[in-house]
Image (cartoon, rainbow, N blue to C red):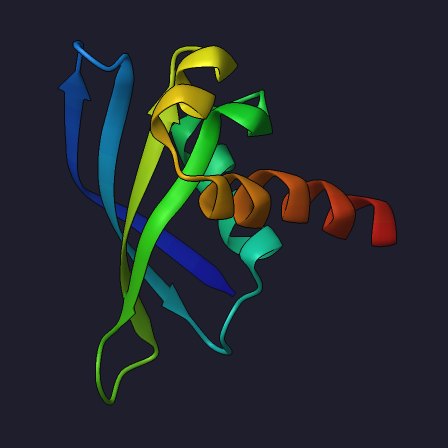
Length: 101
């Protein structure tokens, strides 16, 4: 079971994205696909290609992580501002994980 709590949400109008700090509580460490699915559900995002997770840090001794996600207005802006390895990990990797099921 995965629970997501939004800690902070900021609008960055210059870049065209929302910067979302979240807390993730879990029983067993979740996969990237599970993390992204749960974030999309909580944030009400329909298009997975607009959401990337930039950072995940585990809390020592607890089944909890703190993360930072970026939700873009459009894919063009995402590709302009996000590094290639983040795009590969959170968009292309997500698509491959969906196809594998």
